[in-house]
Image 1 (cartoon, one colour):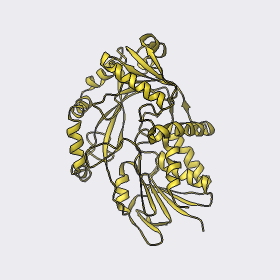
Image 2: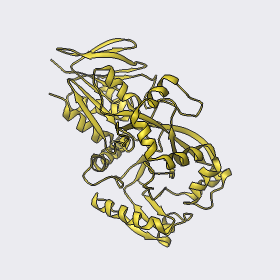
Image 3: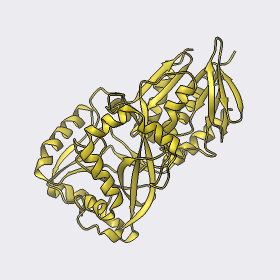
Image 4: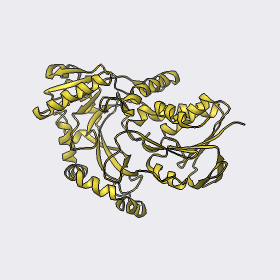
Length: 395
């Protein structure tokens, strides 16, 4: 009898898992549940579109390994299905002397991760990006951009052709792992399965709990705020321009990205979201916010990063501060060159002791596998994550 597998979540990771399942076992009966009315509505459809190289991650980590293999598979899939993409390379720019040792360490890490990363002086940096201000820079040729919603649309087409049962507008509201099968309760009735994989992003810990698992972490939502360069200023950025990561910040910092559509995005800033899907300061869901604030790990994280957190909030509320962060990289940018752009929310897993989960995190419980930490660079690594997850499922 063919296996019945339910995948919860219709972002790129969930769709890639479902695609892997039907590819490996065409007889499998795969159902994909997505609470939104369409696909890729949250992290997948609200990021800067970067195909990451794996530069930043510790050698041997899942992020480092799966970025490399996942990016290759992602770009091959994009080529096969005519999805817009480009391998543009990127610059990581040091703008002050205190950043030079960190730039050198990042260069060594890139080489350890098998990247063709090269060190540039100021003139070499301007040869790639004429408008940057750099004392030195790294050039990472493997980085690119892709239309992630377009990738998801192609995955949905492949799944439909393979006979998968695709159910947008269907939210998981409960369930249990019984003696012989998993019963998933949804907003449109129950679904019985032999195996369940949850890839629910911003709600993945909540869905895991609904299915009887006690996650070792809690998802804390961080809103990533973006701006877009006005058309007359877009020439100031040819490809991708990043700062040297600040050790005080848990994220990569505000950067500039020319997407596949030619628009240049700036960001993201990072502040605590007031709802799981809180895309603006005005989006507040009291019950969700209360759950976040009641988590001890959040307060331990806040104490550890109090200074940088206050800086991020100030930059969120003051457009001039946001512009100043960008002018460290590209001095010719003016405040009037920046336009509002849609925000994203990062589903970041936080441990009870207040530390961020640095790597991807997958936990298995009975017949269920839960993808509990898959923020950036998970979109890049989605095909590799899918291969790992399906390998955890009993045959």
